[in-house]
Image 1: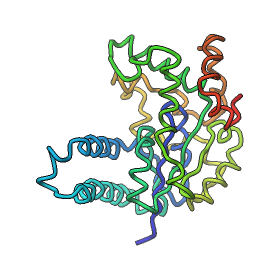
Image 2: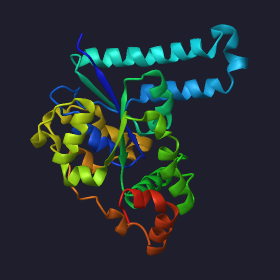
Image 3: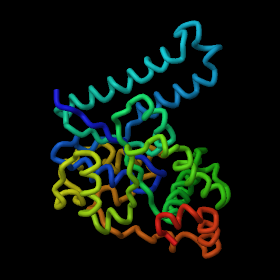
Length: 277
């Protein structure tokens, strides 16, 4: 069997993880684009919840937490093997779910050869996008984590929570940050960075295109997505177009000047670190 490199893509929701995942699945030695790895997220949430109640719920069955941990992560191994086999065992498996970012340390502790690509996007654009999702959920009468965000302070905490949940020192040498804006504006340089990090091989001419292969993905079936009120609210027409810089700076149409100033204050150091202000 070929040596397999597993790469997990994370970052804040609405930070461009879907279109970058789509792009990074165009490699000649990667899997094609597949939808978010909900199974991995569900397993991890179950795992973490059970650890808080381990003595009452699990100790008499599994004994040590290490035994329980082995059962949980065996599901991860089997998932990767099944998906890999479905797509002819590519050398590089590129998987993604923004919410898995919160568990990168747990995953990395167990799978010491897995690598992590962390997407960063202008907090103002991300928050403006989340606010649009929130509005759609409210109009549909849904109560979701997005509708619980009340103030700009709440939105800023939500944005930062993805990155503050990771102890990057524990991922030393096994992660890279990828700025959404850099990727869409200068994909060649960013692809070189990703290729060196993951071992994936790319044709720069294909990466930004929405291809026939992408059209086969259920996640890009707009009609089906919009039938689901929760999932439909996250839909973006950018998913089924060639990747461009069209949405960069779109926050200016959705946020007031006061909101923009507050975001820049509350996410100050992080935004400066990545050159957003």
